Picture 1 (cartoon, rainbow over the protein chains, first blue to last red):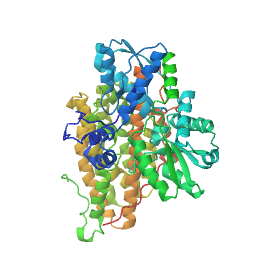
Picture 2 (picture 1 turned 90 degrees about the vertical axis):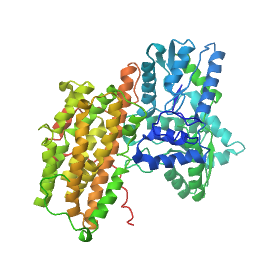
Picture 3 (picture 1 turned 30 degrees about the vertical axis):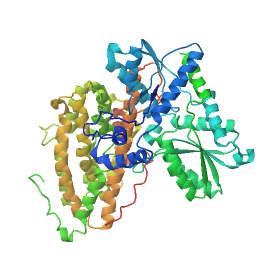
Picture 4 (picture 1 turned 180 degrees about the vertical axis):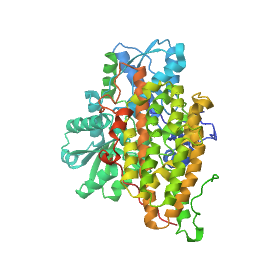
Length: 311
Length: 294
C-alpha cells in the first residue's frame, strides 16, 4: 500500500541541515514536499504551523496502517492470506522499506495498491514510479512487482463507504434536514497543467455524483481544497471558500462536507476543513458539519480485497 | 557589473522616481515566487533524481533554451530608444555565445542532453507538454503584443533574475544524480552569465522604471513570465512522473492516457514561424495586485 505519508515522532534523516531536535518533524515533512529550498522557508513554516497546531504530527500513517490491517484480515477471511506493508512517499516507512520488509517475509511477488482515489500524475503515476524506484534500489533484494490494483473511484464499495459516512455524520437528522442542507464534496486541488492531462477532475465529479445519488441528495456541489495561497497559476476550482460563499448567498445555513478525495482524516482534512473552512462558514453564517473519510469502512476494504483478488 | 559597454549613466538614486527601490522590492518578489522555488527543483536535495529523470527534464527544457534569443530579438524591435537597444543587444550577443567559446546556449545544452542519453536526431522530436509550448507562446506574445516594458519585465526580472536561483537548485540535483562538471557546463556557465545579464538589464530597467505606470508594466511582465514558468515546472513534473512510470510499468495506463496529443519541438517551431500569428491566449491567472508600498 503506497500513500502520501505524514510526520510521526523521530527524525526522517533526509535533510542535511535538520536541527534533529524534537519537533523538527513537521518542517522536514513539509520541506520534503515543497523542496528543501531556503527560498521556500517561509511557506514551509506556514504549513508546518498547521501541523504544530494539531500537536506536531499527522495521524495519516497510523490510519493507513489500520486500513492495511483491515485489508489483510478481509483477504484472510476470503482465503487469500497475504502480508501487507505500507510505504509512504514523504515519511517513514518509505516505499523501499515496505518492499524490503515484504521480501524478508518471503514474498517474491507483490501487487501495488495506490491509496489515492482519483488519478493524476502527482498521485497515481508518481506512486507507481516510487514503487519501481524502490524495487530498483533493492535489486535482487526486491520482490517482483507483479501487478497494480486497478483504480476504484467509481466502485460500489468506495461509494457506499462514503455514503455510510454521510449518514453517520447526519445521524439523528430528519430526511428533510438532510435534503435541505448543502452537500459539498472536496478533493485536494492540483495545479492546472497537471489537471489538464489527467482524469482527476472527471473521476472526482463522478465519485461525488454517485455518492450524492446514493445519499439521496438532490443538489450537491464539488469544491477543491488546500491550494497554496502563493501560487501564480490556477489550480483546480472552485475552491471551498467560493462554494461556501455561494451557498451563503443562496441562503444556505447548514452544509455537510465530505472530503471524498481523501481516504483518512489527516492534517489537510483536520486543519483545512475542520479549522479553516469551519471558520469561513461561521463567518458566512453557515454551520459546517463534516463527514469522516472512509478510513477502514468494511465496504471500502471489501472492495479493495475484491480488486486484489482479480489480479 | 562587468567591464565593457555601459550605455548611459545609471539614474541618480535621489531623482530616479523610486526606480531602485522598486527594483529591490521586485528582486525580493522574484526570489520568493513559487516558480523560482518550485518543488521540482528543490526536491533534488532530499529526493535524489536519476540520470533518466534528467533525460525527460532536458527533453522538455531544451525547447526553451533554443528560444530565448528569439524573445530578445523581437523585443529589440520594440525598444523605444537606442539606449534600451544597447542593453538588450549586449545580453543578446552574450546569449549568441560571445563568452561561451562562440557556442550558443542551445549548442551547450545539447552537450548536456547527450550526457542524459539523447541522440542528436531525437532532440527536436520530443513530444512537448502543453505547458512547455504555452511558456514559449506566452513569451512571444509578451515581447510582441504588449508594451515594451512588459516584455522587458518578462525577459529581465522574469528570466535573468530568476534563473540563477533556479539553476542553483538544478545543479545540486544534477550533482547528486552523478553528472560530471563537464556535462553540466550549460547550467554552471549560464548561472554565472545570467548574474551579469541581470545586472545589465537592471540598468536598463532603472532608466525606465521611474513612474508608477512604468513600474506596473515591468512588474506585470515579470509576473506573467513567472506564472508561465510555474506552469512549465508543473508540466515537466507531469511528464517526468508519467514517462518514468510508463517505462517501468509498460502494461499500466498512466493518468495521462487520454490526454490530448502533444506537439514536437519541430512542429512547434513551424507553428511559430510567424510570431504575429500566435495561437489563442493562455488561461493564465491574472497577476496578483501590486504590493503596498512601505
